[in-house]
Amino acid sequence: MTLTDYKDKIDLLISKMDGELILNGSHDHASVIIERMFSHAKDTVRILTRKFDPRIYCDDETVEAAEKLLGDKSRAIKILIEDVEDLNQNNNPYFEMLKKYKNLKILSVPAYLKAPIGINFALMDNIGYRLEKEQAGKTAIVAFGEKKLTPRLGPLFDDVWKVSTFI
Image (cartoon, rainbow, N blue to C red):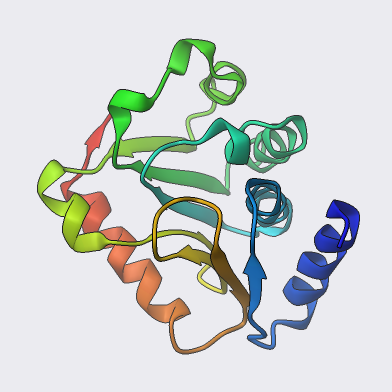
């Protein structure tokens, strides 16, 4: 499947909202999913990630979609990063272009929570997610409109957010 086909598939999942699960099998797929979440979000995209991998978050289309989302002050991006020591904000186009937006919030997850969490995910408007269990960033599941796991991810994110610190 080409990246264009994969992008079309993600758009279809978002429009159908029927909970169908598909696999994310590469960093390119992950980047497409995040970009489409930014493009379709009506409220907030929340991301809990081990490290802020530029292969996923920093390609031109993803940064542009984030900038469009953040240009609307009623919407937001909230990011929790576990390994902030790997984060190079000075050479990262994401931070350079987007740091001016007040509705972009980035926090560091406390060390004592890293092991117990055990997953990474992106959550769009509490209606769709990309979830990776092994935290390597390549293999994940994606669903929009799924009703069992989706409602649990928002409260998990919010609980971690409350005890995390701004970077």
